Image 1 (cartoon, rainbow, N blue to C red):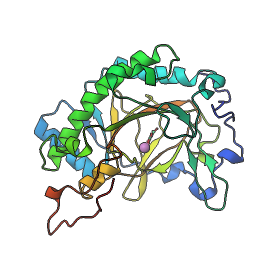
Image 2 (tube, rainbow, N blue to C red):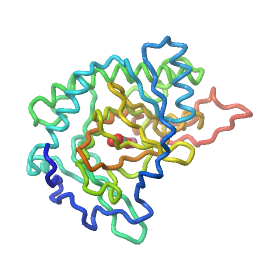
Image 3 (cartoon, rainbow, N blue to C red):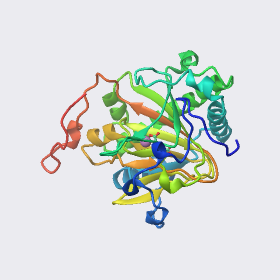
Image 4 (cartoon, rainbow, N blue to C red):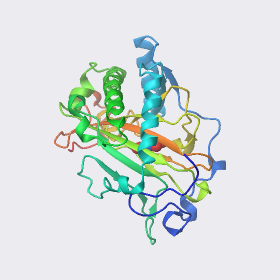
Length: 316
Ligand code: OGA
Ligand code: NI
């Protein structure tokens, strides 16, 4: 894809105009990145006890980790990134058909904004395609029709992510000293499984823009696949921004708010953001696993005692 102006599905064009330029104090300054720290990389071929320990430590200290040897074929990951790229290469008129502000639409294109006090909101330098990734058997009609190979690849990818998600949730449960299906049971029979594909075109002056505003993920667990060789994701560790740079064939895992609450604050849902870059476009595919709307989530009883009083209320 060439470095020409990117036309958003909402009818506007990415440019260094007021709409996209951040106020001074919201800018990401590369020299403020902490170069010494990086998030743990965990080898999923390690033994279960080793994995439980390493994952538990990463969840407590970082809320983020990367996994290698996770079993999702590397060609499939590449195909998934390529089909998302192909999707965002469709003419804007075609993407516009899926553009909506209605967050209840299962299949939709949207934009993110940064709300800035006393100023118009700033539009993020990105576009996002969201759709469910479950039920896999009956997914196709909920996915974009174009590019034509998208449905097949996204369905295959969703299947792989489904089993990896189960595996990770059990390892995380065990790390909390719980039965391995405990977290999954707490999140309910009908989890909310949404995938969010983010596209970040190159930006002539990355310090002036952001790809995604600082946020925590609302769900329980996120598995993120990102373009190889392009940086963009950053997370906060003890008050400093650190880069979550792509590691070959790795997937990024981060905890969402629901696990922070269920674990009574022991595991962290950490603030993160996406920055833009000058040289090439970047793709990321976040697969979210969250509770259904009607599930009540609160700290798990077994994790509450005199030393660890409940830090959160039970809410749906
Ligand atoms: C997200 C997210 C980060 C990225 O989609 O919630 O944090 O690198 N994405 O795109
Ligand atoms: Ni996120």
